[in-house]
Length: 176
Image (cartoon, rainbow, N blue to C red):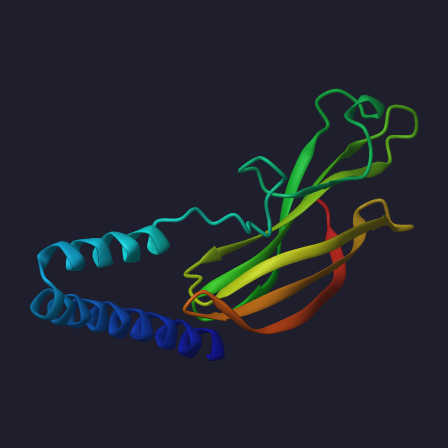
């Protein structure tokens, strides 16, 4: 519920900001002229249109989701690569998920974790997820992995970080 209220607050403030900008542009046009109001509008658009350089959950210089690699694909049996998806937390408007790629090793046919990543799906307004570490451990049961995901949820208001919440999820992933 808090996520929904925070998203509504962000959307409401953004709409209020747009209305204020229109009124400010009208006042600038009346007081200083048309050319000054055009410069003001282009200045505002340059702030809105700037690319988001602070992509928290992407690989450097890429749009790919940040992935933790645990083992090489060369050590696995060919064709045994499997990917599972685990729901870490569901809110009213979004979901935090962990994806684990694994396969069977060539000699013993044990399940071995290869890679893992986290992502957020759904409506994400005013919050952003920044993963810090993902740990995947094998268990005695060949059909389960233990996982621990650490990261930070940044609570933003009109693009400014208001609060950073440390988040940890631990659990057991049951393999297919």
